[in-house]
Image (cartoon, rainbow, N blue to C red; front, side, top):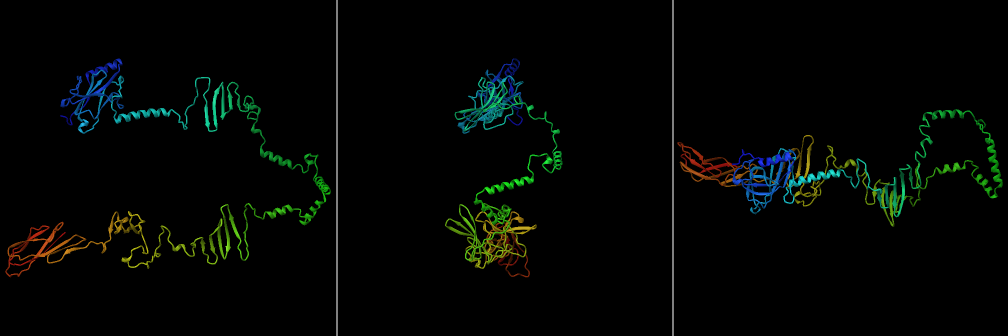
Length: 613
């Protein structure tokens, strides 16, 4: 009998041990091919190394997979998948067969019933055997994928293995869309013709190639090609499309100033040169002092210029005599050009300039001068009209007053209506969004247009707190003693006035009023009842018929107490005798009745009362 003390195992059979030893000694491959399962004729089998077959084999099929356990290289994992259309028996024993058909490993397992699909259970059974070998080196892990079923785990493992190999291969490739290489790049086709490294754009192609020991960069544009750059490995010359370029062999650096033939430390110091030149400048004050003899003196130069002008004037036509007249008209001002330029500097340029003073536009008594701004779209004009500063826009045949200020009242307007200003609407008298009012500056809202509340059928109140048309939102006001306590008051989503939230926690208490408060109920009469709607407390009362001496009377209550009866009281209406003896009592009290026992000498009806909830 299988229980918590049962042991399950997989072992090599004697045949399996021999084949394992033979494979290890001679290096002969050893291949597993099939797995069999059986029901052991309903017994609880124990694997025996001398077994050559299962006790009662029910199914034998090719292996789904066989592999070495990645966590223990001496453990072989063999697996078979039994499809849903095979079964109708219990699985208690498992056998592993090699390629020769010999039983090489045997195992027992916890009983598992394999149903048939026709039984209404589409169960695919996975049977797995793990067994230890001395070495897995000579075990051939091979299956025929055309005759086995694949479990999801097998597929996932295969995909993971394939993905890893693919990623490793891709990691060694360069992306077509651009990438970075960690090594060199070699182009070779094994012939004398060099492959090219090219750059392509819509207008042409540029490519590097190597031919006859000449590295060339050639451009192809349409039907034309041109060698833009080349390097001859034979001569070492570099050439472009025009000819050979300079290089250090043809034109050695020694032909030019360099660190070998020019020492910066011995160059003239700038400070010393300036000082030397300044000293030399004081040595002479005339041209002769600088040994310049072939030059006019200052006096000679002035005389030569005067004589040349006189000769030019004498030789000029009479029409040029007006120059003298023009000079006289200008007051013979020798600095006339400077005077004109000075006056021009006081004017503003037509194409834009800055002014240092005010610009005043003066009109007549009937018209106002305008300051206009013109663009291709229209014109904007700023003017003064009837004590109003106006800005008017003209677009086509349409004009519109965009903005104006009335000098008499100070009011500002746009094209539609008066604008706010601090005189009419002082900021201190208005509330900004999220602004708090200080104490003593309470917000007051009038509701003089509101009739009595019961008659209101539309929004005519003075202050409204609404839910912004969100049916899932409440309409509430927050009352807050900051740092102490806060709570919300308003209409909840069930249309009841409530107080709660914030400091009151996740609670909302209904405010009861005559319209929604629960009513006390009852039935008034000699026999009746009363119920408190707030606490649920109930009272019942009544009167019995005549209760005789030593008589028990059961009283049925007008209604049953829903939960419990707390007490009963009664009194008999009868003439008391001076020598009366005995007592009264109550028994058999339930939520719906009780019994009065008269043990006294009096005879008469009884008033009673009961209470509970």
